[in-house]
Length: 399
Image 1: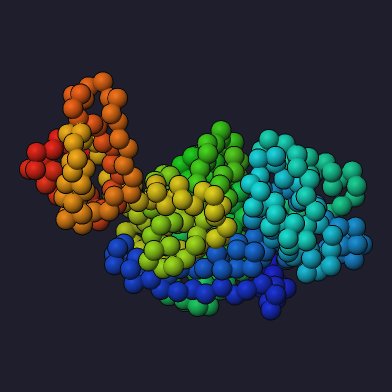
Image 2: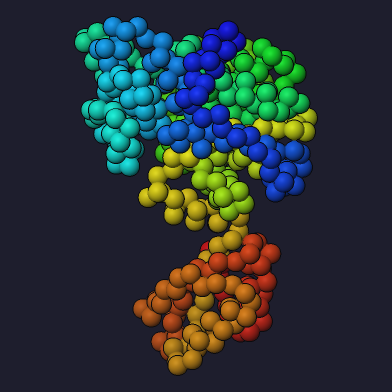
């Protein structure tokens, strides 16, 4: 595999961005070891996928390029194939499931790809795309189950080793397995002592389940913020490489993913999608080995759906304890609400939302029930606020 990765590095040089590898003092202090971030969210089209897509399409014969290529994807692979094809003068068609967000469909079209919608999910779109390509004699560009695609993603491993030769731990997102199989095979071929950790969303942990069973295994899957790695079954080829080169695969919860997105946005000013933020979430959940002293976290993409961003940020704030939901009862008289607001303001909390419930059955007729959402500093601040409210005669219920 390392020979293919070296060839891929030559193929994509000057075309695909060599993304920055930057240190983070904030995250280093938080986790207790040296943290470096590999910024594939700054890659062309906003994802690492262009590496494998360009490497694969560039390898096609003139006859294959003249006919065009077909791919199946609901997101980053679609954009990578469309971009790479346009750059190489190749016509591309992407089969997308009906559930694909509009923003991803529009982006794929914007990079020059044609789109056909088919199927309720990725698996149905994938099967249709393979049949479509075979019937018409077109080259199919797999999202991960292909050595040239894997080798393209493996060039990230080369860049990490060149930029940080004394790295001891590399943390990589896992979906279908193309990214981590390429990176791990590359790194282990050059430096055996480096620990490679894969991270999945708990809602779609096919790789961990496959490793437990000793074979690629399909899992039901559930909705997840990390939609870019929500793959029901890891690939056959990628599974073999993962089993050989990856030291451990862990999974992380939705709250931690949201908190990681928020932290990267606030502390590093980096827009990272859920699939890319799972690596940071793994450190937040304490799932990295104690041996980690100088770790690289691969932030695989930045194509977060803006319609979801508000919900993700709110979930992240809740996970960090920076949102306090409470309910209390006040007299329904002039100045009562103003008095409560002044008390909250004096405690340095920000009122985000207030709901008045005059019809609450359990509330006295001369009173109203308030449900209040506050922005606070953290859990300790919330406790101070609740204590102060009680001392001033209120009976707050935290929610």
